[in-house]
Image (tube, rainbow, N blue to C red):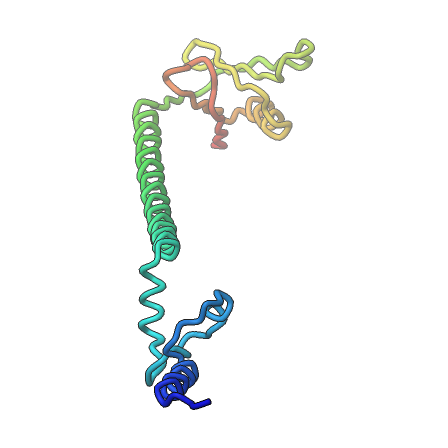
Length: 185
C-alpha cells in the first residue's frame, strides 16, 4: 500500500484548519458556548461580535423597547412637572381671587358706633336661645349675642356707675353689635 502524498497534505491541512478554528463546527452548542473574543484574529473581534449581535432582530427589538421605556419615563417626568406647575399656577390664581374678595368685603364693610342710653338684660333666655344684652343706641335697640360673664358684669356696672357704654356694629347688619367698649370718665 502506498500513501498518496496529496492525501497526507489534505489531512494535515484539515487538522491545522480545525486547530486554528477555520472550519465551522456543526454543533450548535459549540458555537453558543464560545465566549466573546474567542473567535479568530488578534484582539478577539469582541466589538465586531457585539455589533453583529446588535444587528440581529431580537436585540434590535430589545434596544427599541429600552429606548421607548427611557423616553416614556422622560415624558412622564415632564408631564408631571407640567401638571405640578399648572397646579401651582391655579393655586396662586385662587389665592389672588380669595384675597381680592376679602379686600372687597372689608372695603364694603363699614362700622358705626354710638353711645348707649340704656340696656335690657335677658337674665334667663328661653331654652335654646342665646344669652343676650340689648343696648339702646340712637333710639334703636341693638343686640349683643352671647356676651361673656365678664362683659355682662362690666356693662351692668358701667350703667350703675354712670360710665359711657359704646356699641359698635356693621352697617350691613345694624341691629347686631360686633363689640362693646366701656369708657370710664
